[in-house]
Amino acid sequence: MYRMRPGNFRLCSWAGTLWLTSAAADRLLCGVGTNTFVDCPQCLETSMNSNAIDFWWNWDYDIRVDHSHLPPQVVKKAKKTFTPMIWGTKMPKDYSFFHLGGEYIMGYNEPDQYGPACAGETTAGTFGCGEKDYRPATSAGFASLFDPVKAATAWQILVAKLASVAKESGGSVRKIAAPAMAQAAQPEDDCSRDPVLPNATKYCRGWLKAFKAKALTLQCTSLQGRLTNCWDVIEALPIHAYGRSAQEIKDKLHEYHKVFLEDFAGTSGRTKKTLWLTEVTMGTNEAEDLVTFVDELMNPTTGLQNRQLFGFVERTSWFSEWSMGAFTLGSYKPHTYEAWSSSLFEPTTGRFTPHGARFIHFCRDSGTSLAPPTPSVTAAPQRLEPKAKAKIAPCSVGSVVPCPGGEGSCAGNQCCPDGSACPSADAGFKGCTDSKLEDCTQMTEEVKLLLLAAGAHRLGAAAMG
Image (tube, rainbow, N blue to C red; front, side, top):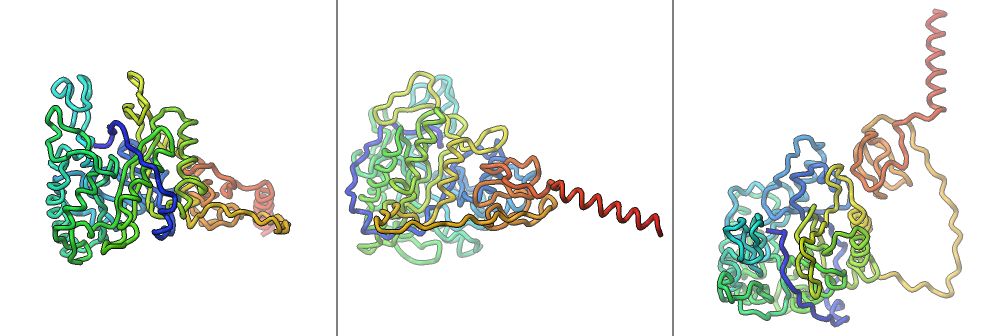
């Protein structure tokens, strides 16, 4: 379903001038791809309170989180930012996700690779399954979707159903993202053979390009009610990328940009689309390496926050798992019993891990970030006068108060734009990157003396009366 990744990626070099042909996105939207919120609802609360997570998803069309103990404003935001997925050919039991508040639904999960379920000794020896492996299916390629030509027909049926629901029941979902890809963009494999067969390929590199060619010949109605082909109903192309270095990820993004350039540019009669990087992490369990990886992937100079280089990437969501089995990445062969961790959160507290806090840091800086400009050699240095620090008046827990530095306001268990907890948050609130920088719920000595004096005055006045 989501844990096991494919073998080797073939990553192509990128012609550095390609980005000039497509307009830069306004800002990079950040998210989390995880199944761990069911184990850690406080991790979901941390995400929603971070003011940095624009969307999240869990390979399902149902939220599947016990939110009975979460604050109402957190639950409301979690529903609105949830992006549902139709994982395989099985249709949803209900379509209530149309009314959660989000605008997108995602298509199939990784039909470009064969990843069946494992059931211990029963499935031992099949693709990726050992004698003691028990896991759900990792990829939809085993579910009659591995052949992109056949998958396009299934896609036509799915889109027709979703368009019908959108028309009949309304709701906010009006856009659809393409099936999410794990393999390379350039076609290399014969994907017409059943991957169950012993000598058949288990990966379909170039799946999306073959799917596009077939879908262009099929008629679909978009979720907005527009009659078109079954390719141009799509508004985003999600891909998944794992690596031992951030450069591998960026190379894969550029490869997809090159292959689907007319879609990102909206030329040759195609509707304009964006690229989503919806699963990304580093194959490691070293905390320092993960922090470095995030820095190299997300920075505004050579990373995704350089919107001139990566304006075609509209969304990125971190693949957050407590633990996952290691697998081959490029030339790297994992050791026996090697396992990796990618979680943005600490499992018992819900706080961000070091690389999680770093990811959130770059997401908070999302905007129309460009590469840092070259400073002018003739520019005269400016003297900046320090601003007087505004004092926050004493408050009660949950009061609406200004954030430190005057950047917006907050109330109670929320996070300020700088990542610190709101000055009026509960003393035990741990849902932000940083703890309180200011605490208005704790009275200063001066206030205590004033209150004592006022109390003494009232007592004296009562005694005299």
